[in-house]
Amino acid sequence: MDTAVKTPKSMKATEMVARDYIEMTETYSAQNYGPLEVVIKSGKGVWVEDVEGRRYIDFLSAYSALNFGHCNPRINKVAHAQLDALTLTSRAFYADTLAYLVRDLAKFCRKDRVLIMNSGAEAVETAIKAVRRWAYDIKKVPEGQAEIIVFDGNFHGRTTTIVGFSSSADSKRGFGPFTPGFKLVPFGDIDAVASAITPNTAAVSVEPILGEGGVIIPPDGFLKQLRELCTKNNVLLIADEIQTGMCRTGKIFACDHEGVDPDVLILAKSLGGGIIPISCIAANDNVMQVFNPGSHGTTFGGNPFACAIAREVIALINEEKPHERAAELGAYAVSRLRSIKSKVIKEVRGRGLMIGIDIDPAAGTAKDFCKKLKYAGLLCKDTRSQTLRMAPPLVITQEELDAGLAIIEKVLGDHP
Ligand SMILES: *Cc1c(COP(=O)(O)O)cnc(C)c1O
Image 1 (tube, rainbow, N blue to C red):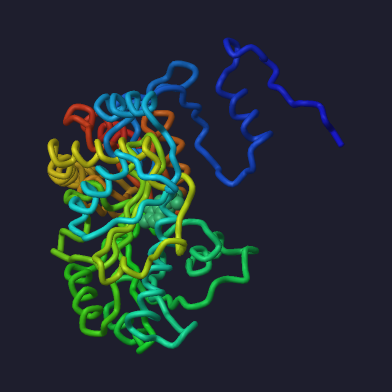
Image 2 (image 1 turned 90 degrees about the horizontal axis):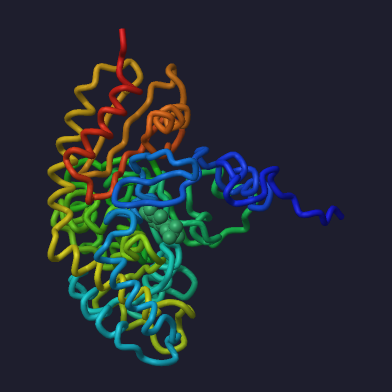
C-alpha cells in the first residue's frame, strides 16, 4: 500500500494556488461531486472571494441554504453569542433555546408542533415515518400496506429510502434494494394523482416547484387541486419546502401562492441561516401525535446552537420580509432575462428569485455555460443537463442584481 501522503507542489499555505487546493481535494475526497473550478475562501452578502483574490457574485446561494447571504451580520451575531453559551445538550435534557425555537417555529409554520432534525433528507425521512404511522394508527391501513405518492423528477435527498423513489437513474444505480411503498406519477398531472390513490394511500409528497428537477413550476391551480383531492380521500399532503420555503419564491412558503396548507410541512436549508444544518417537519396534533418517546430522534437534532440561529432567522423574516424583495426583484430579473436577444436561451422560468434558464442543446450544456459565467464573475449551477439555476441570496440589492444580469447578458446574449 502506498502510504506516502500526497501533498501539492507548493506546500506552504501562502504559496498554495487554486489548482493546488483542487488537486488536494480530488486526491483525498470521494469524488461524489463535480464542482466548478473555483476555490472560495471568504464571503459577504452576495459576494465570495477565491484564494487568488478574485471576486464572484453568488447566484446559487448553496442551493438556497444561503437565502440571507454569506455571513449575515445579524445571524452571525447570535451565532457568536450562542457559541460561547451552550452548543449541545442532546434531547436527554431540555434547553432554553429549544423551547423558544419550537414555539416560534410552530407559529411561523402555522402548525401545532414541530419536530427538529438536522439535514433535509432526515426531515423527509421523518415525514415518511409520520405519515406511515398515521396511516396505520389513525386511518387504519392494514400493517405494511401504506403507500406514498411521489412525482417524476422529485428530489427529496440522498438516503437509501429517498433515492429509492427517485426517478433519476444516476441517483439510484447500485444502491438497491429499495424501500417499497412509493408510487411515481407525472408532476403537475392531477388526474394521474387521482388514479394512483387507493384506500392504502397515506400521503402525497410534493415539491411546490421542482428544484433539482429543473426549476419546474406546476400548472396554476395544481397545488390547490392536490389539497382538495387529498382532503376528499383522507390522504395527507406533504409539502417539501426545503428549497422553495423561507422566502425564496416571493412568499414565505411556495404553497402560499395558492393558499394551500399542507398537513406536513418540511423545512431545512435556509432555516440554518447558512451556518448550520437544521431541519424540521411541522404538523398539527392529528399527525404529530403518532410520535411518542423512543419512536424517533437524532443526537444533534434541536441542539441549542442551531436553535438560536434558526430562531434569529425567523425573527429576521418576520421583521425584514425578504419574500417581498424576492417577489419584486424576481419579477424584474425574469422579465429582463426574457428580453435578452439570444440564440442560446430557450426558455426562462421563475417564481420570486428561483429562476431556471434552459439552454439550447445546440449551443452546449448548462454546465458549459456555468464555466463561462464563472470566468465572467458569476457563480451558478446546472441542474439536469440543460437548465441553469439562478438563485441569488435574497439580500441582493438592485445594483448587485443588475451587475449579475449584465454578466448573464454578456455571456448568453447574441453579439453580432
Ligand atoms: C436539498 C433538498 C433536500 C435534501 O436536503 P439535504 O439537507 O441536502 O439532505 C430535500 N428536498 C429538497 C426539495 C431539497 O432541495
